[in-house]
Image (tube, rainbow, N blue to C red; front, side, top):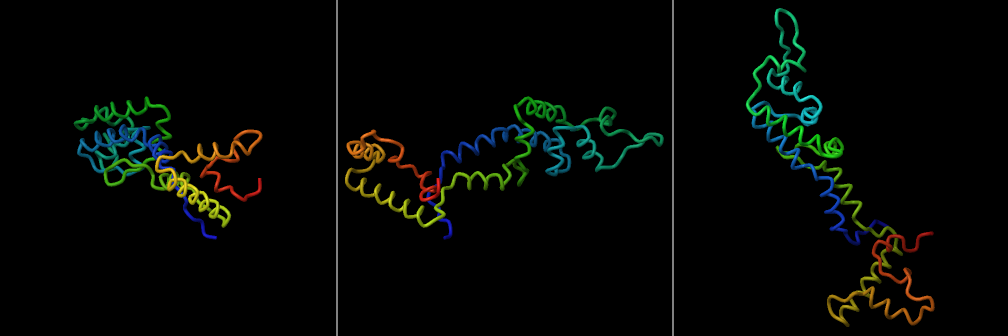
Length: 201
């Protein structure tokens, strides 16, 4: 059968997105600092290169990628800014870069972002994978029937006892007298478990 969406773990999704996006405000500070210098727009690759070799990137942007020669000798662009007047805002950019580099695993976080419409955002495929990870599906008829049965139980319990009912607690209290070993995990309502219903153990 075609998989059927059962539920979405929104809190888990939001928490995971937040953890991946933790350094986005810092990266945005870097991008804003660069843009304030009035140089040509950065490509995605150039933005990431700023963190490893800012001088080279800035030199290329200032010279449109052309090499500088003095008396026929080419100037190494990694040191070229030492002899050129730096654009206004350069020191602010460097300070922002250094702040980001102090953050734990900044290079990992950098690999998970892109520039989109002059904003720093998470890579869409990463967001999609996190969303998929936190979406629960029924993939078999048994799983779908288990879900429908569970939802019917919840609906009936709500009808009888009102909103705000702890259905798990209700079932525990109901099942306890019939279980000589006490209530155990077999009787808990767990929507995550529905996806394994009827599967071999």
